[in-house]
Length: 104
Image (tube, rainbow, N blue to C red; front, side, top):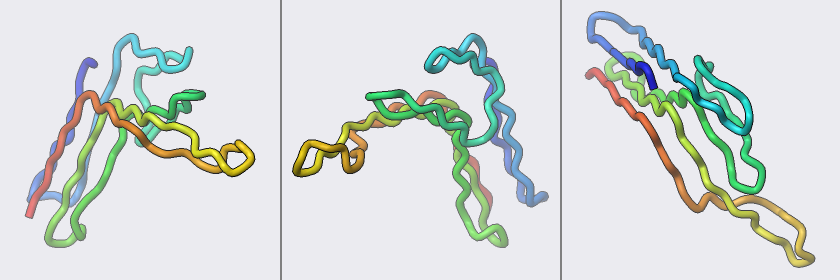
């Protein structure tokens, strides 16, 4: 990871994040500057969220943001009566590079 910023200020009502990655390859694809909440599926494993951004607060008196640069969600299939996959259950999370900022 080269840089990760998530500044917030009581003087402004804007949020700014500027993450970038160096030499990251996810499922065979090089990723350097992912858009917010970029999802890459990992067959038989789960998925990865890159530049995951979660907003908090009411936007009037409170405001916040959490940015996770890499969030790996591990899942296992839920099988139906006849063995077919009817859904997925999250069994683990791995987060690399997390920043939280808020103002009240």
